Image 1 (spheres, rainbow, N blue to C red):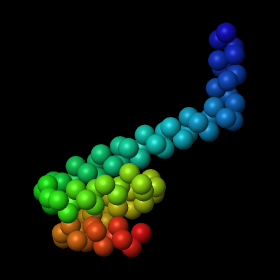
Image 2 (image 1 turned 135 degrees about the horizontal axis):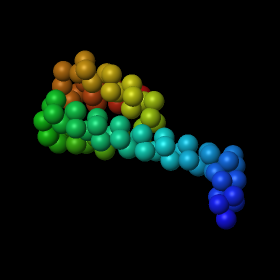
Image 3 (image 1 turned 90 degrees about the vertical axis):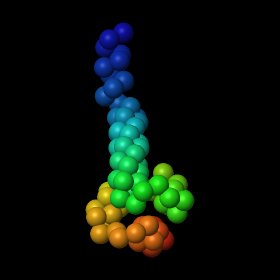
Image 4 (image 1 turned 180 degrees about the vertical axis):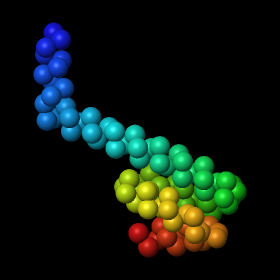
Length: 86
């Protein structure tokens, strides 16, 4: 049984699924971190909460780009404008 488990883990299908799960985990972690950072920066406000609802639909690379961009944002409208431009 152990040999079959090892063989399964070496298949391309298994490795692709494992990689996808890692990416999804990183995406979820990124969303949690960005949400915390943006709420700390701007406080909890309706406009921010509306913008945060858009994060789960974003690819990981876009979330990573956003993590850099928020350093320059002065207000929630900067975030909204950035999201609209993507």
